[in-house]
Amino acid sequence: MKAGDYDTLQLLYDDIPDTLSQLIRTAFVPHPGYKFIVSDFSAIEARVLAYLAGETWRSKVFAEGKDIYCASASQMFGVPVEKHGINGHLRQKGKIAELALGYGGSVGALKSMGALEMGLTEEELQPLVNSWRNSNPMITAFWWDIDRAVKTTITQRIQTEVRGIRFFYKSGMLFIKLPSGRLLSYVKPRIGENQYGGESVTYEGVGSTKKWERIESYGPKFVENIVQAVSRDILCYAIKTLRHCFIVGHVHDELIIECSPDVDLDVICKQMGRSPDWMPDILLRADGYETCFYKKD
Image: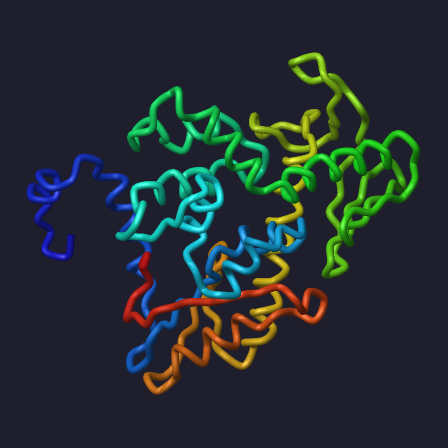
């Protein structure tokens, strides 16, 4: 690109617009004489979900610094699994299960995550779903406890609570109070019927058409909203912890800090990994790298 050799660019890359969009990151550079430290949370959603649901075996994995994909596969198949080691071929199944099934996903979610392209067969998918759910009974129960709490709050207009997450109805809105004290709000919630004839929650909001419409939701989807919101609150806490640094950007679960060459990466990561006072027992970890331009690690 810098040389203006566009013929070679077209020869090497199939999708030129995609290549150019990826290069946009590299346009962000620190001032001369400075560097970027890019630090992000390790498996933040998996950690928050395990903590909120009380899935203790997962929290133990994080406490011991082990690979969650190997641990998940080991829990699912009842055998030891090590990356590049014993039963290492099962790690991929553990990984795709972790990425696709944490918020109530099933066979369709596995397919969307590319399970078939990764070598899994159609016949393996449903047993994989069953194995993951059986291995994570607290998370599975958490989905439906949240589902019942939301429906009870909407129908009876009373406050409910599940594992420290509070639900209440006020002024025609459903509110979910997070551990940080922040509120998620859902406009004009009511109980409706889903496409399968079952009971579901609907509320008003901006849908996939980018227009204001009624949106359907249920327990696992509310859990996804809660987990991602708590993860965001943890990032905001990290921003406050590192407010003495020059934070030039934040993307999803990572911070981009411009600093002098002598700033220690490990110190930044350690400070970012502090647990907030409103969730003191959660096990967080941040990893990072130093660079002279922004990029994907």
